[in-house]
Image (tube, helix red, strand yellow):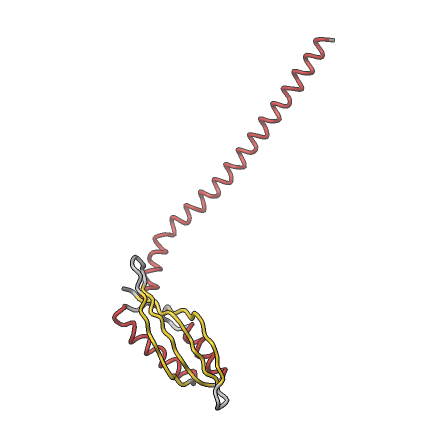
Length: 161
């Protein structure tokens, strides 16, 4: 009877150890598979880096003007977009914000325009979707006496130093 009890305790204890080892092994296999997937994703990302650098350079050449052309490009862009959308420009202000150690400089453009609501929205949309790297930060509307609206729009044109 003692042999059977010792055998049962030994087998029962050994069974728990085997079960724990199997769970540990399964957990390690899952972790290894997860890490393999992560390695594959990182290798794909690493392989795409030269293409990304080339695409970034191409984007800069096509959509980001040089600093020396920034003001004239901004003025030309505002004039063209205003003419196409049918609004009247009542004022334009520029402010260059060049922070050190930044790859691009930001030229803040504040434009005041007047016209019908649809034309003002068309103006903002055309400015935001222009070929240059320009972001509309904010705009606000104010009513005018002649039934039109006035819009003050602030945007950023990014320039190469």
